Amino acid sequence: MRENQQNLQDIREQLRRFAMERDWQQFHTPKNLATALSVEAAELLEPFQWLKTGEMSELNPTALAAIRYEMADVLNYLIMLADSLDVDLIAAAQEKIQLNAQKYPVDAARGNAQKYTQL
Amino acid sequence: MRENQQNLQDIREQLRRFAMERDWQQFHTPKNLATALSVEAAELLEPFQWLKTGEMSELNPTALAAIRYEMADVLNYLIMLADSLDVDLIAAAQEKIQLNAQKYPVDAARGNAQKYTQL
Amino acid sequence: MRENQQNLQDIREQLRRFAMERDWQQFHTPKNLATALSVEAAELLEPFQWLKTGEMSELNPTALAAIRYEMADVLNYLIMLADSLDVDLIAAAQEKIQLNAQKYPVDAARGNAQKYTQL
Amino acid sequence: MRENQQNLQDIREQLRRFAMERDWQQFHTPKNLATALSVEAAELLEPFQWLKTGEMSELNPTALAAIRYEMADVLNYLIMLADSLDVDLIAAAQEKIQLNAQKYPVDAARGNAQKYTQL
Image (cartoon, rainbow over the protein chains, first blue to last red):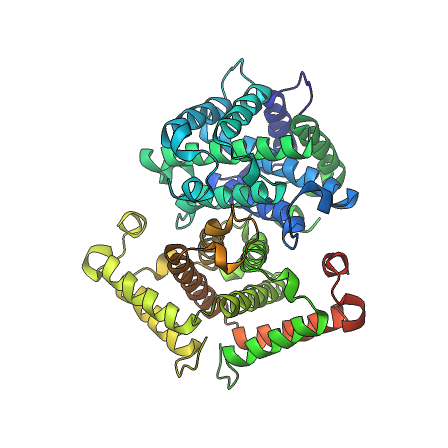
């Protein structure tokens, strides 16, 4: 994520036009978009499934290129779903970070996987 | 997604700080982040699972509020994964839309679910 | 699921032999098997993602054949995970049905999607 | 999976009765069952998401008990989906093992993660 003038609104406009030109809005119910997003998230996970450490160094350039496009698919479906449900993704993301800050206080959570999953 | 001055870079900085303060970077391998993203995508799908039409009108306000926060979780893990793999999400999303425009030409794809899934 | 003398134990033995012959047990940690299972479950979901009614009649023979093998993948990874965690799948499935019978009493749950998801 | 006289057909009968008593068959389209299965597979994955080695020893008894019931949920939805699509799960699983034996010949696949994912 280097500097980039484009933003989520621009992508949303491109995705709206893409679907409209193909008359695909009829398939894009919120449920179907959430399903497609979940399928893409699993495709993103697939190249990682047999890794031992899970670090980037275990992935070859072909896998990394595939992963990059799967991340794009996830973002695109997320933007389409947000559009269909009138959700402001950036505002929601920030609210969630604030909620998590309350849920996982620094002192209790620090460096502890047990706490990380069970707090 | 109404007008919003904040952007993905701001969220990324907040997420970096959040993890650093809790010493959680040790758990955030690319594999673990991809796993968490996939788990959140499924939690997002969960309120839709028994719907009949899949339209927004089938969801009550409680479900919609939960869905909004699950979308936030998906975006936050996607930003963290992009950060760990040095991926520019916006650039990747736009490239993918252009690839899909070639893969699904307007004339062949228009309004046809069969073509939609099989082209 | 027509009559079949084979059972889960036979499949488990075949899967053990398959992995041993290829020296793949090293990749089969419980976490990796759970990841692979989740990826296969999403591949199973993929042919359904744009359907409108979600009924079998919307699926062509090619899709149905693919779905059948994805179900096989899900079962095989489930058996391997059960083997690695020493879980009796049949006993667990029956216990879960009994728990659900208590959680969703017949009178309260009957024919109500709202109750189905919220009870 | 220790010795057990019960089998998949018995579970299927219990699941049929369970749904019928609650008039829930109306929600159980193949698409909805595949969605529910995928959601349960992700819930099964959730306790593994931050583990470092992914071995059973990283899981405490509470997590293991939860995992066991999530495995039960996956199996139960898989049986219901197989019932709705008239799939013989055991036969499909065995066919898939035979297909994989051809796809991953012992000599080429042995002990090699690279080959494991790329063959």
